Image (cartoon, helix red, strand yellow):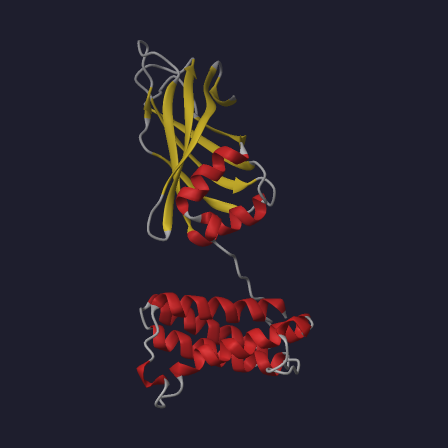
Length: 270
């Protein structure tokens, strides 16, 4: 129970009830339901409730909370009454939440703000408070699975800020270009730019030598990653070449996604 004081003997009590999620296309609706009970608030006034949401473990920003509707204060209504606070989270945010949560409970910090309108007896009817919300892991997992988070793999490729001409920065720009092409529906261009990023990866980290004809089980870890790089290079080369074999290659969006992810993963490893 969180109490927000709005004047002498006047407060709004908010108790977290449940969390809900609704899937969208790249952006998802996250809703926190509270039970609201006014104490000493003048009938006829209206409580405007808003807030902000952060992850408790990392203090990472999640989003601004908006009330689905405002709360009118009545002298005859039954309380508590439901208040729904919503925000939008992206696929990337959802993946970040899952990475930070690591299978445990979802813990959130909620900054709550209330402004009371049409309340002349009160001098300055506005206040704020912070609430801590814990959503049990199994309950949140149901929502996360519905939103597709359990098949998300966050790939963060650190780029140097000081040298824009470094190999890593150039490789990162190629990956960004590949992602833009993928977003635009240009799968061929996306694969081509991912392949160019892979060329730069080769200069960053020359691949280990291995015998392509040798038994795969005899290769050490670096040699197996080198084999992955060779296969990935071959897979992405159709976007550059137009020979008798690759002329009929038609990369799909899913193909481009797989290739970009593999190149990003190799760059992340180094």
